Length: 337
Image 1 (cartoon, rainbow, N blue to C red):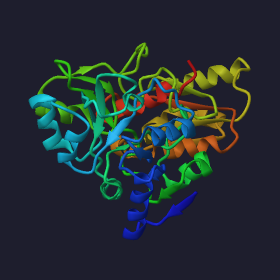
Image 2 (cartoon, rainbow, N blue to C red; image 1 turned 30 degrees about the vertical axis):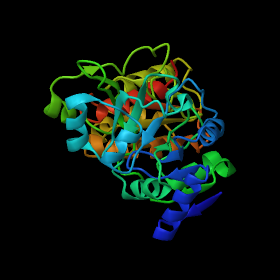
Image 3 (tube, rainbow, N blue to C red; image 1 turned 135 degrees about the horizontal axis):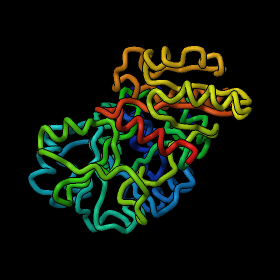
Image 4 (tube, rainbow, N blue to C red; image 1 turned 180 degrees about the vertical axis):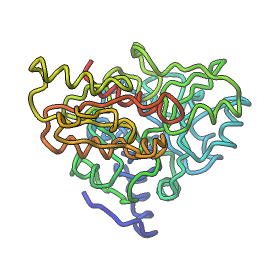
């Protein structure tokens, strides 16, 4: 496994590696992906093996340009075309009718395929140099925290990946929003880096289907009940509840051990008051309360806390607006149920 600088020669090398059946850790604006030629079932199988990912969980196919969507999907209609033209490239994945050439291993045998045109120029360059569409789930062991830096990929996957292109920290920091446009009204299967408000401005109301119990057969990535989890047990609390619950736990003798608090903003830190003394570490995602900044910091802070050998992480929900929905979705799936 090599970590490559983002020179044009190295981007070409990464593209050639994909074309030859290799698997590559590539930066996107959301998280780092583990890419393989979407039409090469052997290469895609290597991705499942490297991640220890169940084969019933479909993958997102990444493309380098809008006209490439026709190689993996067919149809989609006016709504899909509007979203592609206005919100691509960007952190939005669309569920579309699949072309028969796309392997069942990529789609879990479903009649649909998840497609995204990433905004990160390095990702698009690598895909273009590969000459194919690229199936790319997050570059981490299945169910674990998503990687937002090249060093996360190297630490988590090591020699299971052929090459890693270092594109620096991911700007968005949470996975893409997944929208199923094969149904009316369209359904958000996973909240993510594209705010629902931005989607509804273009196509009207959508249904939020990315919460609650997991479906028997996932239609998109990120629909399982447990996902995105650190190895350190994470407990999730409602806004304003953390201080009271920590004081209560310590008083009952259930707060023993070193715990960290993961907070949305400085207002949440102030609400802790004297209860702050009960935490060995405190991390704030966005001092000013910016959901975009908080989303970009989420996985980096969780990786940081997970490496400290703590006994638990106590997290408080973000406001349920804009990218706060994606933050809360990831925290819920990462938490002890």
